[in-house]
Amino acid sequence: MLRLMVVTAHPDDEAGAFGGTVRLYADRGVETCVLCMTPGQAASHRGNARTDQELAEIRRKEFAASCAILGVAKPIVLDFMDGRLHRLDLYHVVWEVTRQVRTFRPHILVTFGSEGALTAHPDHSMVSVFATLAFQWAGRNNRYPDQFHNGLGPHRTQKLYYGTAEFSLPDRQPVALAPISTVVEFAKQHLETKVAAFHAHQTQAPLFPIFENTVRRQGSREAFHLIAQATPGVAHTENDLFEGVQEEA
Image 1 (cartoon, rainbow, N blue to C red):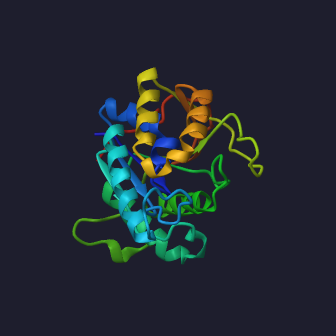
Image 2: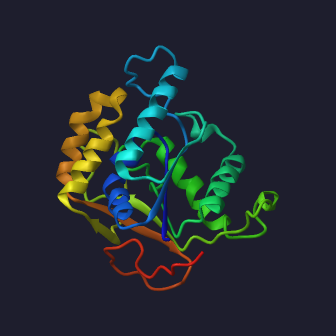
Image 3: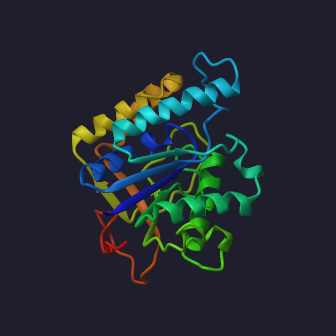
């Protein structure tokens, strides 16, 4: 079975940034995993939560509901602190992301660009760094060899993509987005599923209008930039993240 792993920062990223693509590939029989680095406890929009802990618990449930709508086989939320990923020990965090990659063994890894996506959120930028290093290091036997027990070993993911876009958001700090190499187009039903998945995050209801305006402007497509691949070659435009991927264990 082909496997796709998406690495995000907060609950709702999986739907807002990658929801159409995740649902499309799930419908095609691809096993999907979303690794969310934080439970989103520092969010500005908090619903009825009185404390950070309450908000984290609510957002974990919202994440699970969203992933169910998107057909995610393995939804995972880690416990790193929302809004403070830039203050963490890089080697320690990448250890955990590398372990998750080696455990799930994806063919394709997708994450944000270093600019932090359209919102330029610093957590998104840091997740880009963590996931990029994990992509490179998970396949090497001299990186985190302490993980090699109970059947866990190096895993070389075949392709790494950053999400990108053809436009920026108004009234935001400027971002320099990666050029588009791959456009994944999906049916209108997948767009509506993406919207429904985002709406599962009820604590974030104040964001619904701007989210819907953005995704409907984008339409039934999501854009990506191919950052690295296991087989060297010349870049060319694609319409399938799994183009050229070898289906292997």
